[in-house]
Each structure stands twice: as C-alpha cells, then as structure tokens.
Amino acid sequence: MATIVLVPGFWLGAWAWVDVTRDLRAAGHDVYPVTLTGLADRAAEAGPEVDVETHRADLLRLVEDNDLRDVVLVAHSGATMPVTGAADRLPERIRRIVYVDTGPMPDGMASIDFSPPEAREAQRKQVETEGGGWSIPVPSFDPADDPIQYEGLTEEHRAALREHATPQPFRTSTQALRRPSVLPATPRTLIASTFTPEQVTMLAGSGNPVFALMSEMDVHHLPTGHWPMFSRPCDLAALLNEIART
Image (cartoon, rainbow, N blue to C red; front, side, top):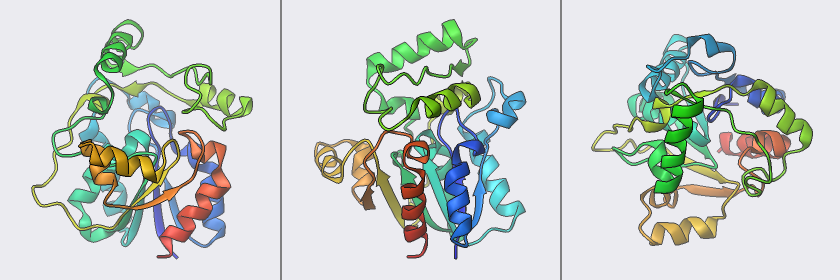
C-alpha cells in the first residue's frame, strides 16, 4: 500500500478528487487530497501575494507535519509547479511523482510560459478586467470553447465545476519555479489525457523543453479531456493504484 497525495490543478480543491480518493482508499492506500492556499474551502486565504512558493510551502508542511514517507505525489495540470518544487526540496520523502496531463517545468519557467504569446496576453487582460488584477477567473467550462479540454465532461460535471471552482491567484501562473542545478533522481510517471505518447515524443524532438522532460518518464495514456478525475475517475484511480504498487 502507498501514501498518495493528490494535488488538483487551477481553480480546484480537494473536492475534485472525491471519487478517486474513494477508490484508492478502498484499495488500501493512505490518501491525502489537497486544497492549496486561496482555493475552495481555503478561498478566504486568497490574495495577490499567493504564489508558487505559497503552494510549495503548503505541500512541504503537509508532508513534514504528517511525517509522510515514500509518498506518491500526484499533480494535475497547474499543480505541477508546487508538486515539482516540493519534490525538489524533499526528495528523500518522495517515492514517485505522477503528472496527470501535465509535466514538470524547467528551471526559470512559469506556468504561463507554456501558453503561446496571444494566450498569455489574453489571460493578463482577463485578470485585469475580471480578476481584480490578481486572480484568474473561473472558466465557463463550456465544451464549445475547447472540445479537447472538456471532452468527457457531462453537464452534471460542468455544473459542479462552475459551482465549486474558485478564482486562481495569478502569481501561481506567473512566478517561475526555481529548481536545483542537479535534479533529484525521483521516478516520474506521466498520465497523458489530451495528448498521446507519440505526441510527447514528437514535441520533445522539436525542442519543446517541457515535453523533453515528459519524454524521460514512464508514460501512460488515459484518453479523455483535461479533467480525468471527473470524466474517468474510476479509470484514473485504477491507473494510480497500479502505478503506486510499482
């Protein structure tokens, strides 16, 4: 059995992992679904000062305060930044990192840098006009806006996301991650949902620095949209159970 820490991506809290947590606990694992500072039930802690370091500190406290060891640390989407950062700091406590439809950023790169220039500019304008200058508003979760990202989500899923999602502190997107010059040799696994293993190889070969790091991992394909904890929770839990037992 494993100790599994589940960290959700932007706009989400521990609530997003409820089905996955249930299945993993039924399989005998010790599971810690996480809500990061300023989100979900911790929304009252949100503010312009919340950044990648804030969220990295959240995870370091969770691991150290609970004396967690041999941790399987799971990052969905934007959680890659604090998860990667925490694993860099406590490699002796981490058995494996699992990236769900995301991957680790190189040193000095921020989440927002993964998007093309026009998308970065659009997000900055939205933060200024709708997010009070410091938060990323909750998206509409309308499949018409992005059929690939929202594949597999039912209207019930989308309603739950719109009801429970909370604005994301913008500095968690714009603050670059500082990584050690010699990276820990922690085993890493990728669960790709909106792209294939073949695309990982192709994009890595094109020189994309994020996909280059992904190509070094053990890669699994779980075809669905960007939120498999909603669209395919049982399959995601089964895959995490398999990975955790390796």
